[in-house]
Length: 106
Image 1 (cartoon, helix red, strand yellow):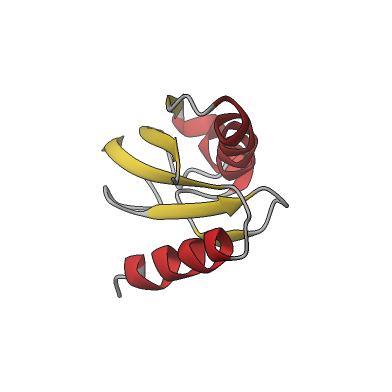
Image 2 (cartoon, rainbow, N blue to C red):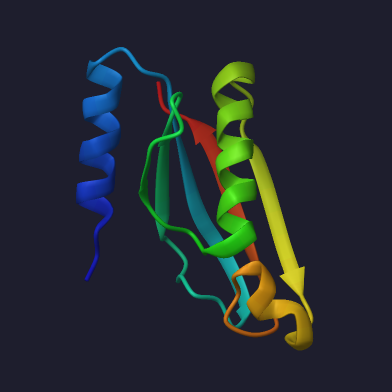
């Protein structure tokens, strides 16, 4: 199921309430990743989230980056990668890499 419409609708609702919002999008994956290219996560300035780009520690790091992007208005590209042995601990299904683009929603 593609939940992009629901995620972007929530982001729009937050913006209409006057909140700052950032959108994170999976732009590339290598090997295994829990989310496919195009998966989105919306984050508001209160730390509320809609959607998902990974899970575990990766998702937490993306939320932190989104909060920074909302303040700086400077987009960021993040990349996370781990070996098979460490993958589950950081939220990747098994060893792989994921690249995520984070931008403020105007």
